[in-house]
Structures are given as structure tokens and as C-alpha cells.
Image (cartoon, rainbow, N blue to C red):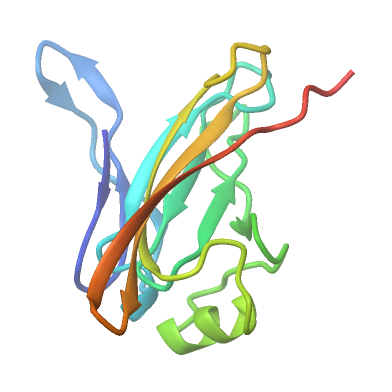
Length: 149
């Protein structure tokens, strides 16, 4: 089970032991402050190596990818929009890194991973909030991943 915590902005993984029992938590992301609060987590084997990889959508409007390793640990998280490694950034640092015209404008990203177009490559469905003059609106976008040869 994956769990994003509002405060202090951490993401935890609980390995299922069966019959409703879970192992002690593993902290995937630690103390990301405002950026990871309200984090949305999703696990999928994106590189077909048999290990679950993680996507974490955050309050700042970014998605961080964590490649799963064979030993059950995760490599450092990398922004799928900027390619930057996130080492406990603050909300404003993540927002600034996305630039004036981010791929997905707005904040509070929510995501789902699936092969939406049935081409064999996992894609991302992303929902978010975006402030407008009339109030807050939301959008849903699909990012289709290219099939690698």
C-alpha cells in the first residue's frame, strides 16, 4: 500500500504480508514539506523489469518518477517534466523549476497509470486544479508514452 501524508509531506510504502497484515513502513520520500503534501501515489512496472516503479503527483504540480530496484528500494526521484532530481524541495522550488509555461498548468496533480491506448506502453492520466479569474477549475489530460523498440 502507498500512502501520501499531508504533514510532514512524506510518502510511505507498506508491503502486504497477506490476510490484511502489513510490514513496517518504508519511507519513499522524506520531508518534502509543502510539495509532497496531498501527494497522489501510483505504482506500475513501467520498464517491464518485474519491479514496481512509483509515480507521485504533488501539490506543486509536478510528477516524480521513482524506478524500483530488485532489492525493493527505489532510485532517487526524477521529475517527469523537468528531469530534475527532487531532494526534499519546497513547494516554491518545485513550482519555479516547472517554469512560466509548465507542461501541466495548475497544482494538486492526481494520476493513474494504465495502457490507455492499448499499444503496450503504460500511459498517464492526469487530473489537476487550476486557478482562473472565475475561480478554480480542473482538467484531465492523458500523456501517451511512446512504445520503445
